[in-house]
Image 1 (cartoon, rainbow, N blue to C red):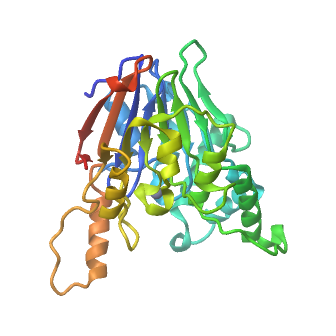
Image 2 (image 1 turned 180 degrees about the vertical axis):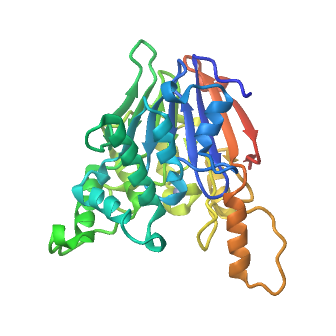
Length: 362
Ligand SMILES: [Zn+2]
């Protein structure tokens, strides 16, 4: 059995098999937060396997579950976790707090299997488990947005979790967009702002008096000062403490990075951790992305590298078939694991990093 952290230690554990991401965070005093979810090699949500291995009582000790957005690689197994972790509060992006989005989730569960969005289906399962818990309406406990505090201990231990996105402007965009997706409800809308789930994602900071972790979700930079990372950087209502560990946004992609994040949100002794995403036409992070990140910090850890498991190219098969085989392999392998532990009241100098199941320092 893996040893659990000391009650006065905070931990950031990041898991990723190649497609999928899950962060498990010890908030002190045996209380845990899970951000997003992916499955392990046995199709079990990796947070459940890891916490059980340490003898954590998931039902009582997981206090907060956050869905940063509903992309498949971040949400698989989150419904199952919500069913088990019955004392956890559930938070998701306030950009989803429209009746149109909830209708979309419900409509998705009624359409044919082939055209379903797995991310929305998982969301429906989460709402279902919340409904059976409260016996009333299915609702998240918190709609997360810029500046919102999502966790604090009820004693003197000063560990807190705040959302730092989405911004109010992004929420307005989302409300218009969802209305447009259901025209019978929304009616005519002249201009729909460009919007992807990434732009609605919930970036987070975990803070103690001396140490802070920044979890960048899949938030992208964009060009608008009121949206994406620019809105975070320009915000006066987010916690202003700089972080020492950074879960790099959007698998290290260039469009989720700006020097201002490194300059304004992070300390000089920062450590970067990230998960790869090897599903699209271009795997993330690329070697160029890694080199770019290494210009900002000497310590970069990736949960799986290379993102694809090595496979022999089969002669006579075209590239697509080989790529699909690689993708299946990467989804069913044991997720790599980066773990950072540090005393709550210490300084980040005292942190310890452990790497297992294929996680690597770059
Ligand atoms: Zn992602």
